[in-house]
Length: 81
Image (cartoon, rainbow, N blue to C red; front, side, top):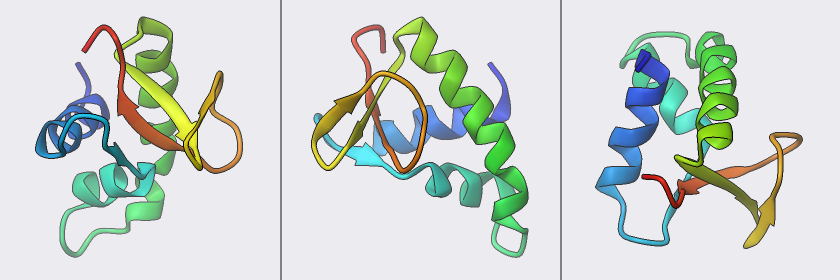
């Protein structure tokens, strides 16, 4: 598991069932308090793609499921998590 995947799992574990996170939250966690979180977004997007394919996470936007990462999205626990 890479650091971006770990960040996503940790953040989702801190939220209640059915709750989501923003991908930027994972990037901010990776960057640390004084880091440039935007520089971490490619790593987060890559982790999201892998985790989505594995069924670890699902993506939504405004409560509607998304099949793939495109445009704005939120991350939720998947059936395999």
